[in-house]
Length: 111
Image (tube, rainbow, N blue to C red; front, side, top):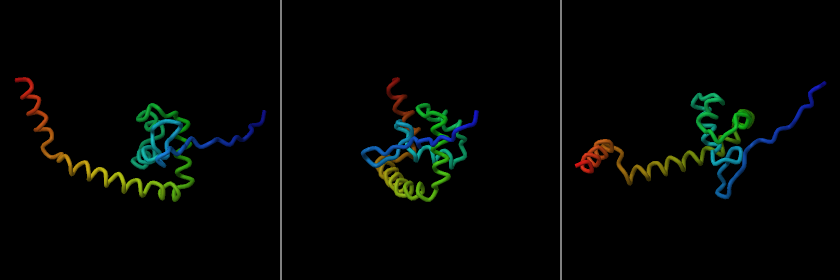
């Protein structure tokens, strides 16, 4: 019996805030592409994000590889937003000495 080529729908959707999510989950395209760029295999990505189906991860990576320029133009401003937010959070809470402060708090509570 001959195979009939099928066209698979890419499991991506855009939420009301304009964030692209994978497979009807809360996992963002940013997260999957970021993990892939960092060297994770599709199997590792599916393990990292248990809400994802392995087949969806493969489809999203294929989509990224076939439309790298489009995806990168979507990701670029999101990366800038993430850096700004990270800076804002770190500005409110200095991470230096955090471990020492937490240990001191624990010791004070144990007393």
